[in-house]
Length: 202
Image (spheres, rainbow, N blue to C red):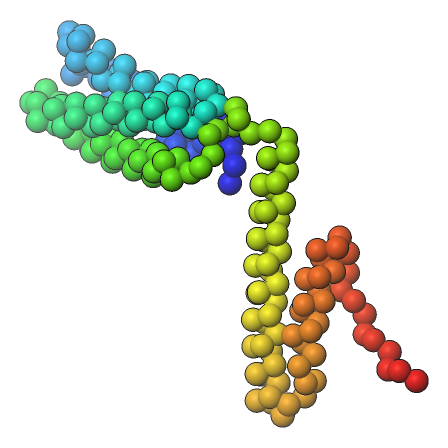
């Protein structure tokens, strides 16, 4: 799936929830008078979603990749600080919240890592470099792949039905396979109706 807005990215949404939950955590009285600790974990949490958004808006894969690694680093920073809090006596009553947050940061890091690897393996330079002609070419290639997948699925369905008919006495021959192919061909030409039965030659 292609995303046009960073607000639609699942990993950005997860990062926003992470920031909200971190701010809810730091409202606990255990953080009272621990200003530097509170400020550090809040800034790191906010950095995750902000860097995902900024990298996405830059419009080039190299810049996006750079910001994704910054976001992943911030997620790691939050996770490291959560381990620190878990081992401190004043925060022992927050163990459940801390574990949940740690699990969320781990999930975000994995998502960002997978996204970064896909960008590294891609030959595309990013949305900023995509011309209308290139976009149309990509769309045609994707439509062709989808058509071939549907055609193959129809062929497999026809073979399966043919075997069932042979097992039931060989009725209807191999017509189902041809019917499936005609249906797919009709769909590719913009016809939403399957072809009707053919009349026998006089």
